[in-house]
Image (cartoon, rainbow, N blue to C red; front, side, top):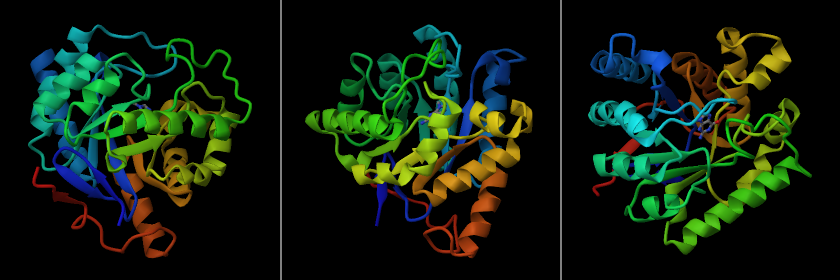
Length: 292
Ligand code: 9MG
């Protein structure tokens, strides 16, 4: 049985799990000020859970191509109030951040998972998660930084290069005493990659399973889907669901998505058809309290 060990939950990955995206950047929930923004964000968390999300991923800094970093204090002010509320909702809560200061504060508050698009490369990031006895970790591959990563992505062999990077990060964490059961690995769709790179990673995603760590994939609304469909970001629902299913078929254990209800329905159909691992019943088997 494959399990993702996190702070409060052992997440059963026998069947693909859905991670719902909660974006706390100012254009998302803050129309009526900070407090109203927190309430609206928590209402969104509850909506995602009703729609069938297994995990919530909350983030206060945009990682979209061209985006600027935000100061630590601002990111903390966006994330912590929502994290406190989300932790009471009965599912694992992940915090998407590259900053060790935010990781430490989130883990002190009780976050279950740290999702770092930078693969814990900032000084102090590995130490921040290693100091925690059991938090889950998602290590993602990114070439460059969000501000400029799409300018000239280059690889000799994108799958081999991503695999080498992820293997090195797993080894670094092992040296710091972090057990493999706490990890998922993510090829980083759209992070310093052309559409051709992303689709090659999808086609050959199973090669990454050789690293012996479950995979997480995030295709939701990404520009590579716009590149093949010709559709703007607001019209990429069908393409996002198709890509999530393809990632699951290619061995991803966790799917990071905006459109939870549609993805969950699509997974149910594929599961009923025997195209995915796991039973036909979902929801009752997700997460056991780890007792920690
Ligand atoms: C924060 N974020 C945006 N896209 C992502 C992706 O594809 N994977 C992960 N792990 N995080 C992401």
